[in-house]
Image 1: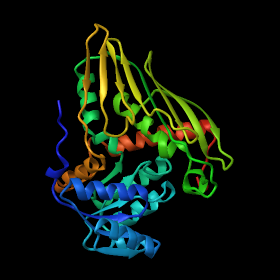
Image 2: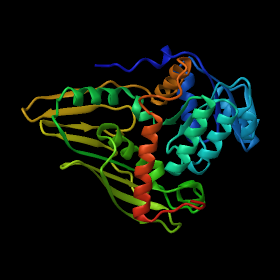
Image 3: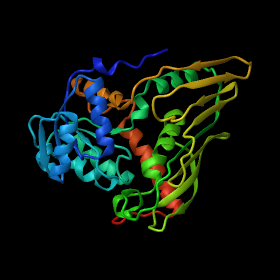
Image 4: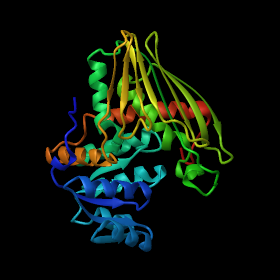
Length: 334
């Protein structure tokens, strides 16, 4: 069943890390430990942060500021790991420098910004992809195989949740409207993208939510509708650690995906005829799979990935735009 290629078989590529925060550190570890790629440079607005990051991950070059990073001739591809509010600007900066780009999810604040980035990439002929690492994990490929084989019949309901307890702090990026904070873009993007991956673009979107004191979404419950009887029921919150599980239920059975459903995990298939079986293929932290996808596509001269296509990102952003509109979240400058 396993069809996901070993990230170590991907061609080598030289990465520049734009932003030296926590997710960038996780990405750097995945790349250095599980691929043949090199981390050649890191850029941060703060010299000490860049130097600490470089020391921790064995990166030879540090840059204070992002322009120097994207213009570094050593760098083939740039990984953008700054707050959502800056993704558009930093992706465009890297594209203008002729670099391939992997942009952390959520790709941008909204669909319009995403479209601007893809238009620039198309004009420049460079590869760009949203870093939705879930799309490239072994258990997700196995889920598609199970569903495509008809093991659970026609899908009737997909459910997924992603909540983390984040103590209120108006200075935190998660609670700051200027940094495009809130549960949806940081956490809820996972269940929304998961529903899109297995069900496609919804025919209708309904959402209810509660805002924080700073005006970003603290909690949202969502229903995405497909055709006459298929629904995705999704939830996200900043106020509680939720099970982060997913279920896919169909006319012939259901699949239970263990938490965290969006990271490397296992699942259980239970058919209506009584047959039960499990998929369990543990893998280390999974960001190396998306890094390997970038390397393969770049080596092949392609500008996007069929598993996380430009249109796929635009579709997810459009759904999240609809959700935000319904719960009343508007970011400064939108």
